[in-house]
Length: 446
Image (cartoon, rainbow, N blue to C red; front, side, top):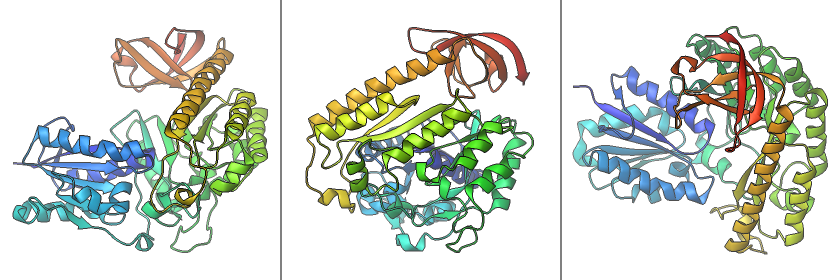
């Protein structure tokens, strides 16, 4: 009988793209993929270590796997597996921990365990490289899981932000070749997937390490220019991009693009220049204002999301209010708020001015409230406009949801025929739950 394998992904879009690619290696070797809640022979957990909460969730997910099948093999891959392999291997029920480079050879390790199960029982095997060895690129994309695909174009990071472990978990900045990115995009386009989201650790750095060297063979602008010509893709969306790497030329291209949508997610992290310097970010708040202004100048209807960290060491009440007021006055659409948590082997853990957890929590709550206000204001600004909606696949309490090209979330009574279709709509009103109602105009495609 075919062995069954199940996957659970924690963290970012990049992890989702890599999980999907790893899953395809299993199915190519004859495994059957099943849902994580079902009984499987192998459970693979793709881990994240950006926040403390992601670390804590790992044990809970292992228990879920053991509950579904106590005799199954459990494998951990991803950032947490690279940073703290022994910590994961010590978790009861974990049989295999693979680091940054080994995870893409997981089927070889799993087949070895299946052939010699006595080797792992009660002992979590670790196969983990030194992060300096993670200097080659493995392309990935998600397909078949959602109505959109996450296409990995870049991995690793050369930035030295004082709070971040990603360079320690994923290695140096390196890029997929232009040829392979375009090939993957074409493969996705043949699967009736309407939207591709470009993802990576620092995608604005695309081109560095494209052929194994440190120089840029291509730029991010080159990449988006080429992708805009791929036939069969209705939408292309840029995921998070650093403000210092978001150039005017890229913004202008998106504004005139056939497929790229008017939605940007641009990390800020703090509205205080003093804190930005302590974080070792590569810009000041003035540059951020310039980027937002440029986007809104050429795309007034564009959606702009912002990452922000609260409670960083040395962040006083005045620093926080500086951030709050900065964001309140800025023409942005929503916030992703992260409460600072100490990460081993980062500079920030050695800094003075530790902010108490209750103050971190209070500041986070204030910014989350501001995000609700900002999103509502952005949605209200879009009422009366005509947009194109791509509908999702889930039935959520009798409703189907979708997103406009500029990331307004809409709802309408459940209709399975709408799944993965594009429709022209007129945005009409905001419901009590903060989602937008609409009237159909016409279908774009099926």
